[in-house]
Amino acid sequence: MAKDLSIAILLDVYGQLLTEKQRFAVDMYYNEDLSLAEIADEIDISRQGVRDSIKQGEKHLLEYEEKLGTVRRFQRVSAQLDRLDALLDILDFEGKEQIAEISREIAKEI
Picture 1 (cartoon, rainbow, N blue to C red):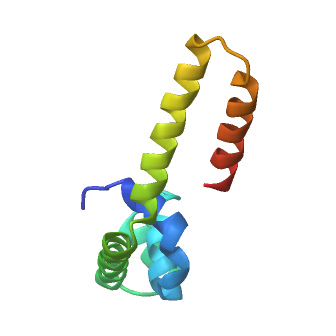
Picture 2 (cartoon, rainbow, N blue to C red):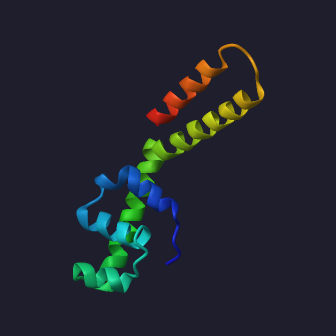
Picture 3 (cartoon, rainbow, N blue to C red):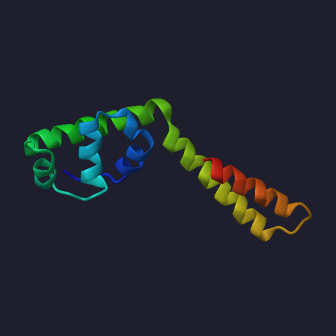
């Protein structure tokens, strides 16, 4: 199974919506980098059971993102804030520091 590390990000955002077994299996696989066999030993189920839990968890995480788009919105806003910060670095005008502060406040909210 090839690892799609974007699943780890989705897990951070939507992980509480998974079953405990799915959340644990996906977390151990992506964040702890454990093998299926190691996870199976940890939670006392078969390798196939672990694989099924991970696959179901991934499927649900991708569906949540497809419907809700939280990660996609976060990445888009974050990129826009980066562009704003880059522009502020090259501009010199009164109020620049206030705009930079607003940008930092927005970044804290996301």
